[in-house]
Every structure is written in C-alpha cells, then in structure tokens.
Length: 70
Image (tube, rainbow, N blue to C red; front, side, top):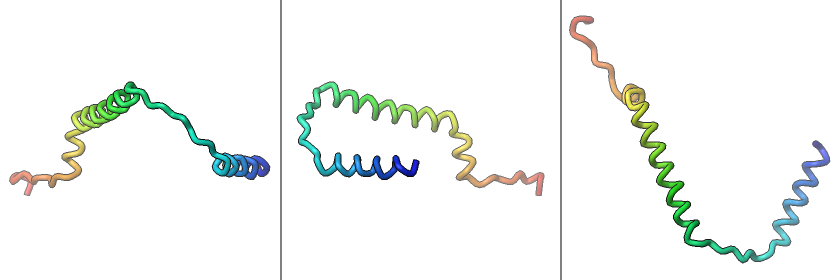
C-alpha cells in the first residue's frame, strides 16, 4: 500500500501533464440519453415524495392537540 500510492499519484500526474486533445463526437443520441436520465430522476424523486408524503409533512407540521386531552 505504501508503494502503490506514490506510483498511482505519479501516473495520475503524468496523465495530466501529457494530455492529448480528444477528438470526441457527441451524436444526437447522447442528448436524448441525457434528457432521459434527467426525466427519470425527476420521476423517481416525485414517486419518492408521493410514497413518503405523510412522513415529510409530519416533520414540518405542528401537532394539533385534542381539546379532550388538555
């Protein structure tokens, strides 16, 4: 472990120093995939809020006391 950390940091530093330009191409499918991931994330958050709505509302609401229990 003691020898691998300096070696890994040296390799990482060399990769940063000797970088080459990337000829990357983003096709139209990449944008639709990103949109699908975002919409799926929003849907998952919406379902989680719907399932746990009572717990969320109980955290932020005051409990009302019954007049009989006073």
